[in-house]
Amino acid sequence: MTGRLLRSYRRLRLGTRLALGLGVLALVVFAVVGTALTTYMRDYLSNQLDDQLGLAQVAQSKNVAETGTLQGKKYWGWYYAVYDVSDGAAVLRKPEETSDLPKDIAPLTSLARAQEATDTEIVRTANLVGDGDYRLRACEVKPGVVLVSGAPMVDIDDTVRRLITVQVIAFGLALLALVVFGRRLLRRGLNPLSDMASTAHGITSHDLTESAARLPLRADKRGGGPEVEELRTAFNTMLEHIDDSLAVRARAEQRLRRFVADASHELRTPLMSVRGYADLFQYAAANAPEERDRHLARLRAEAARMGVLLDDLLLLARLDAAEVEAPLRVRDADLVELVGEAAAAFRAGHPDRPLTVTSGTSTLELRVDPHRVRQVLDNLLTNAAVHTPAGTPVSMTVALERDTAVVRVEDAGPGIPPADRERVFDRFYRVDKARSRDRGGSGLGLAVAGSLVCAHGGTITLSSEPGSTVFTVTLPLRGGARES
Image (cartoon, rainbow, N blue to C red; front, side, top):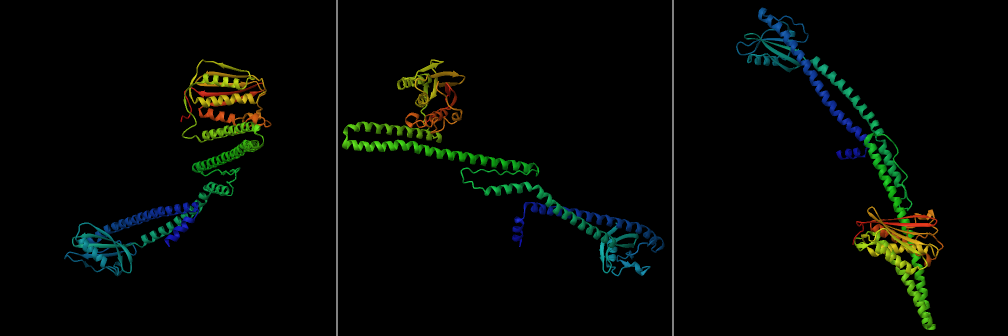
């Protein structure tokens, strides 16, 4: 039974449970207050009755001592008994009126004996058979004579019963009002929590497995106090975080799909070329031996191109994964010397491109991976050569600015359209979609350059307008690379 009630209680709503809990607490408080008030009232009325008994006995004792008779019996229902205790036994004297004595005189006699053995007045409550509870008081009138008076407590009991009845009714109505109105107030205060629960249920109806899934729902209802407001803010902040995470995941999935598609597309061309030249080489070996060397050279060129593409993809993957063994071999190197080597290689490979190198210092020592920094410079110079007409001037500038080393690669080409500037560092992205892969590259050069600069703790930025495209590379002097 108890377990069933407990399960039923747990199934109630929070507002109802709180209201019931407040009701139980109020019931305990009412019981304590009612008991204390009833006890105080009974004691107060009993003390008043004792005072009345004492005042009456003063006058009656005087009359018994002087005249031997009782006078001043003005209270209806009171009992009076005079005992002679001179011989050690309580002997009842004949009453003046039959109504002076109750049918049950044993409690009065017992009190008279007790009074004879003590020097102080004795007051006690006794139940007289047929009459109910009485307040008995005994006092010594004169040596050997004891007066016992009894006052009925029916009025006190009636007053206490009425007080208890009033308390039960008043406390019951107060308790009912507390539970009913308290439940309403609590439910109104907990409405924001119900709104959050409804929002959570609404979220469960959304399919979050889709790549474009979002969480447009928020807990919008106000009120409920500072604690509920804090909970609502945390709840909405959590939803915002989940929504942002879903958006980031969707963008990452889109980038991954595009990356896989672009990588597959880029690898498909050299693979098809390798297959084609392999078939031609096989045919030439049997029918045209003089063509074998040419087909073999093309086969090697396509294989080398595919190897470069795979190396770039592997490098990007390792940079993205932030591997424990980073793809950097950091040591002290002279940036001015690296720029000079990159410029010499560019002039040898592109003799039709005028290149000028300007350096604000003779040496600039950095702690970097010289091979990867050289790769960044080569990619930037190659990008300038591929995407500008023949004869376009190219310049490189090395400078020390505050606590960073800065390299600027500038060309005087037609520039990059504003719509493409934010995506030039994306993988497989080409500004000129019409270029062939032989001339336009795979679209990984700037992506590799950007990732390598970030791995060194630096930045790479682009500014472009017709007649001037500038790539700016900044590297920290004290080294920010992830060392292997």
